[in-house]
Image 1 (cartoon, rainbow, N blue to C red):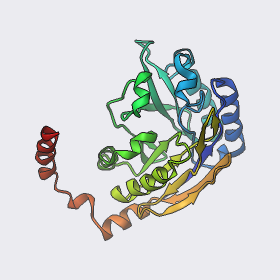
Image 2: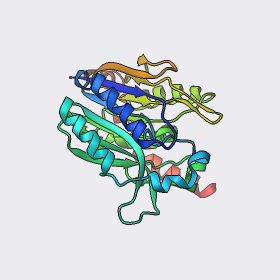
Image 3: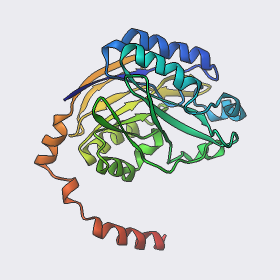
Length: 274
């Protein structure tokens, strides 16, 4: 089985939700009908720079599902294309509580659910609350997971999603220049660790003195880069062959060779010493 993936590597205008939505919709109009799933980068509607957005996050935030989900769902239905996108979410019951949230819409325009970023970068704690779940969704018969930017440093969550059946893990990000090595290394390592596909969806552009590095990529279960963008705005398109997962796991049965009965007690002992 194959899945054709479109990765939108876009510049995001700071705090201008409508301009960013229009740009995302233009990419969907250009590409939507030609891919099975299209992905957008971290906080694509607002921009990311915490020190510049500050308290405006509270007025820019919205519920999930909400206006952005509904708007993108219309495009998904129109083009028969699943959409994965990340925005700042306002809790529907506690408006002062915000999350860095990725939502999934299937090719029929149905909202399937959301993932709230679990591992917040230290500066993000000022505005966002951590999520606590690692959901797995299904689009076009393919099981997918979500990780967000800094999450890619934590192999444990990728292993959990792989054990839950995830075949592709999408990673919306806002990785700046000088951190390219982390984007490159971790995207490849998490794919090979779990013999799955990973998709890094990074942005470009500059906010104040921070320039985002792009380099969005699709990586196969061997840790090999299937396709990769540079540092310019545009859409990266790649087709993945899901049969490679089984082929790689037959050759080296990493998941079946695990010894979970040992890890738990050892981890608890180490945690108690630190």
